Length: 90
Image (spheres, rainbow, N blue to C red):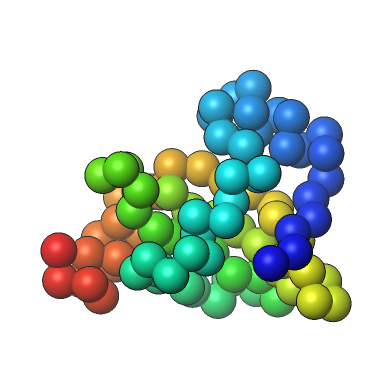
């Protein structure tokens, strides 16, 4: 699995949220995941929400060739958690 990102954005995410894009593999490791299409300008973006250690996280990403380009990583918003729980009956 290949990832890319803007390094300055990665460093800001670490500083602001204590989350590192380098750890993003858990969004795609086979655990239940809510994938939502989230277009922005002329780019097809996706929001993926997962649960990890009883905490919900959302990753915003897009395909760049065969690489997932990471845009944002954060704690999931309440609406995203509700949708996840509805989908996975939790």
